[in-house]
Figure (spheres, rainbow, N blue to C red):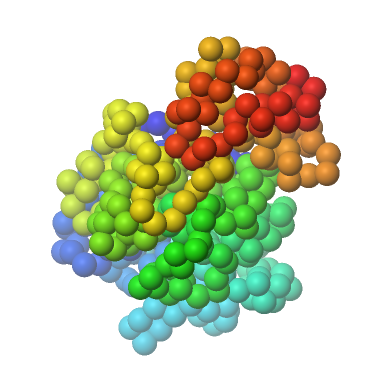
Length: 381
């Protein structure tokens, strides 16, 4: 299992993670065994947003004995009220719910203390001077949570978090369908029966979010990577074609700043299917050709860093050059961090001979030679 650094947290997390929201649907012993099985496959990051006692007890029993091998995303503000989930910032519920999380997970710390589910810009602003945020900060100061994260489905809100200075990582919903949707404060909009057929390419606000996270060293873990399974069927996929789990995983893991995708599992076979990504061939990972030939929607003209442009006769890593160019273009001046990373590349855009062989292989008709020219001009090499 490959590990990736989770932004400025410096935690090395498995690129395939465990999203635990389906645990309560099975007998406790079965779910405990499932988590242990995932651990045996090298998975070491688990998200627990669920407030119900059964799910939390399952995780606690599963990680008992190897707590130090797991990184837990524990959510603050996800509470249990009247036998059901209740999202709140009211401290009379928030504090007991978090203490319950620690007790049921049988631990005295949470690796990633998650500001739970902020999708409204107004709510983000309200949180900045609140007892809730002061509580989160106190948990960090006391070492009960090691790092502060946040979960969101709205790129506008997630961008504010990435720029806040105190949010170190973000749990965000990413898949090729969602990336074409404009910001929304209603998660149900993402599961609408039909997508707007006029939408084309990656939504600029989402692209900006990923680039900002990369630039600010804010790591991303991914939820909703399969769009609730909709992408596995051409009938429910907004593209009119089906994608495989491996293709969806590869799409998420090729976004800037992404460290891990947290998949939901019901069975060991589903764990195996996700982990098979680690040994998948390039053809099996190839989402780009599928999307590019889809009858609905288009990413034409936009680099998705898929790597189909390889090989280059001058051995330029075109995808990385494009990524640094996009990062640099976000600012009025090239950030020194971006410039230094670009300069560390073994080969640079100025070495491009304009053969355009890469363009013939690009599924999205990106004018790569022109981008190489602009990049060389921007960075001076």
